[in-house]
Image (cartoon, rainbow, N blue to C red; front, top):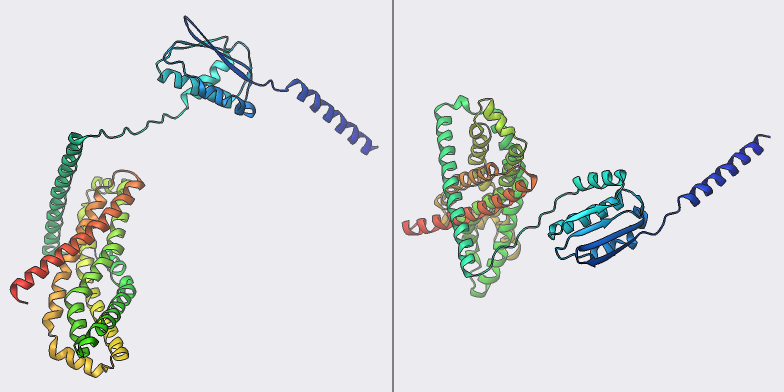
Length: 399
């Protein structure tokens, strides 16, 4: 008995659904246009719904009134949903941009309200204008970029002076230094970088020994590979490559972290609370670099010597004892000092550039990425430039 009732109910529901479908069958939408002396008349008919827009989208896009007045005759429009209203609103916006005066005819209040609502919510897409071409414009662009570079140079010099002032005040009043932040930054900059720095130094020593042995074998001067390895690593490669790794690893982290704080307006909040962002954020990072970069450079030097000694023993038969003997006889502490003297300058440049780039972030995550990239590039460039200046300086002094 219950099964019969259920079957009868289902049959009635199916019949009602069929009747509703037959009553709501959509009429294919059409769009036609006619041109006369007064302008263009565009007639839209049928059911302009999302399901049937594919058959009229091309016709809508092909309409080009060329600045003539347009009358949109919607008197034969049977139904309209959000998709159809979006198509009509886009057409009206495009016609208006072309300079045409658009007027509706036969539009019901419900359809008019829907089209108006959709029109107000269409996002405005503005394309970027191409820069003007020509020699004069090219010279103008070069001038603007040169002036911008000069302004950035003055800004970073001012930031360097401000950082040195805060460092001097910290030396006079050491209780102002935030020790917890300093220890945390020393861990991030130094101790966590020890594995990669040690591996880099070891591999550099191996490569120098292998390449040097290949060349020195031609002259029977394999024993001089010790001087080649020690002088190259202690004077130049150890500290230089360590600074480059620190610039890419820690410098980028400084810019990203402080830049994110700038985006979230945390730095403005610090100033509101009476805190100095240079003293709170920059000084602990710069001091951590000043302390840890010489240590990392020394570790890289020792790892490079170990790698060079191992490769010399394997490839050339130079025993570790012979390696140490020649190292003591022909390589003095001055070679190590020449490399270590550069470390504080590298540290200061990396820290200042990274923090300055972070302060230039302008309110978006995209700006953080751009400034982080610029920080790494500028830091590595300045490290290499300073190393070249030191090489010229020591060469003039005969060291």
